[in-house]
Length: 184
Image (tube, rainbow, N blue to C red; front, top):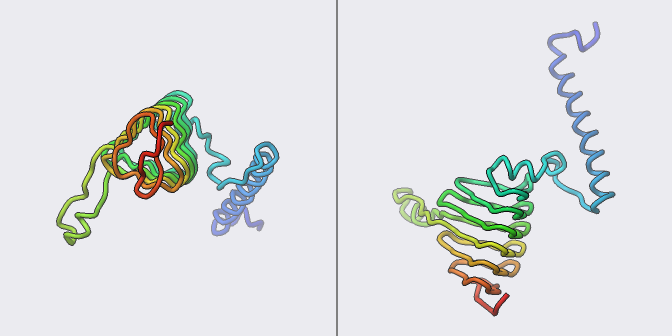
């Protein structure tokens, strides 16, 4: 009897066939993306359409978000905003990001923290406060935004910055903690 007819072996065969098909799909997509865009991506980013994912999350028209991005809670994103790979968008305390923003790879935006919970031995609740990022903002790679922060329209936040206080509209800011350096 051939393995496909054996009830004890057919599930394994089906899984093996699926694995072969997935590997073939990955190889084809990887080749295409490398040729066209000179990029090599995590598997999910080859098969998930960034614009469809953004639309399914209720983000504005033309927004995109990589499959590798983590989205928690209530996150609102304006039109044409780009959310890069390996980002964390924590909307558990509320998160609004405006239109035409570029949120670079590795950016982490938090609207809660568990400092009081940890220090109290688990008796205090997590603290939550909304985060707001205006329209036409650029957050460089690996920026971290703390709970309760407001970043105004038209801001540039430099790579590897920790934003733990408000940044006025039209500002350039960077550092740890981020400080306003000038106008955008």
